[in-house]
Amino acid sequence: MSRPAPASAPPAAETVGVSLRYGRALALDGVSLRVPRGAMGAVVGPNGAGKSTLLKVLLGLDDGHEGDAYLLGRPALQARHLVGYVPQRSTVDWDFPATALDVVTMGLYRQLGPFRRAGRAARERARAALAEVGMEAFEDRQIGQLSGGQQQRVFLARALVQEAELYLLDEPFAGVDAASEAALVEVLRRLNAQGATVVAVHHDLTTLASYFDWIALLNVRLFAQGPLAATLTPEALQAAYGGRLPLLATLAPEEVRRAV
Amino acid sequence: MPSEPLRQLLLDPTVVTVALGALLLGATAGALGTFAVLRRQSLLGDTMSHAALPGVVLGYLLAQGRSLPAMLAGALVTGLAAALLAQLLARRRGVKHEAALGTWLGTGFALGVVLLSLVQHQPGAGSAGLEQFLFGQAAATLRSDLLLIGAIALLSLGLVALLFHRFELVTFDPRFARAGGVAVRVYETLLTLLLAVAIVVGLQLVGVVLMSALVVAPAVAARQLAGSLGAMLWLSAAVGAFSALVGALASAAVPGLSTGPTVVLVATACAALALAFGRRRGVRLEGA
Image 1 (cartoon, chains in turn blue, brown):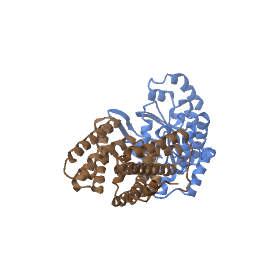
Image 2 (cartoon, one colour):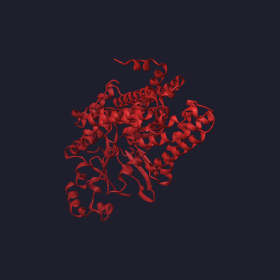
Image 3 (cartoon, rainbow over the protein chains, first blue to last red):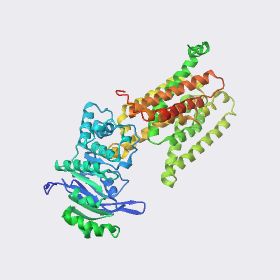
Image 4 (cartoon, each protein chain N blue to C red):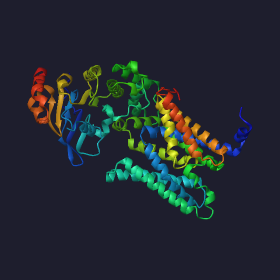
């Protein structure tokens, strides 16, 4: 699905030797990630592998790290507002007084500047984004009354209104029902087909091969990265996961073979 | 059909001053309380109001007399100092933020009470009404205070109107805001400052002990009814203004009745009614 980018084009997202500590524990160790433009990419690894932390570094949300981060060929801090970011759903209080449409409109607040109110044009754009994720019927619903999957779709719509070239998603399918997951994947594929780069933190190995075409295997260190077919080998998985995934031995190689 | 004593009460210029002051204070505290409740800063508010007491006394001492601006400035300084010290204790020493807030709440209030009892033995201090800052006394509002209270109300509510979308974004999803390049720390600091202002401005009316309830209760009531942040702000301001007005008039009419407890009882009654009957009505007040 990804179109070949010119060899000279800078990666959509890149880190160079990024290390980060939480107290004494090393969360990331010398990670040099290069996500090519146009990739439908996943960052994969076991719990505590530093996947979300890596996204935080790219978006300047961490409290300090070694190494450099770039987005769309520019230092990350200068380009992060050009990224469509979908945080983990659990990071906000869904009891906030707002409708689905209100939350999607918030995706346009930065562009509006600190003083301007969102007008009719902004609301229309937000409405279109809600329709893209199949949530147009819920625009007036209070966000606290939406299901987990619907909330996740609202979050994706909030990123969509930015019409970004690069989308970073943190566990977009966590706690999401099957219908919502299918809807989310369809939207991401459409974006990718239109030329956008997608990078999602993901940990469901069974769906990996069918959703993505590029992966990075992370477990504090970066074990492998590249096109899925060449990178998702049992050996690489075994290395990244260590002995921590018994299911891997039986299930994953078969999945991998089928995908390849 | 207002009875004759009530009519007289409403025409009394002192009562009009008190009522106006109460309306302004209640509306300001109620509106700003919206952010305090949504950002889970109720305890922070309580800490700042209790720790404001030593500041009130210090302001009185520095101004050498009852000067509302000096006392409120003092209250703001010691209230914010307590908030900051709690944050330091939590960050540097690993004390739980809640426990740190509780510690400074008690310390600040104790310090205030000690200062208060020392100062009250000075000649002339007894009439300054310092002890009224404990539980509030609406009747202490002077005509000249109205200007200050009005200016603070206008300034803080104007700021909320001006930066409404930024405050909304930072309150709902600070991480998303920060990733979008919004200066989240600046807006969060502004919101905390506004909470401090909301508390300090109402001290004379409600008192340090109960002030945080006037900040929190109207927002709790409003949350039950509101379907948008804008609606919640307006509803919370209305509940705050109503509670303050009723409480102030009641305490003006009944000799010896403290204003603070009366105001807070009205506000919490509103919250209880909203919780019982108003479960998530989704009022949006479009265009407001």
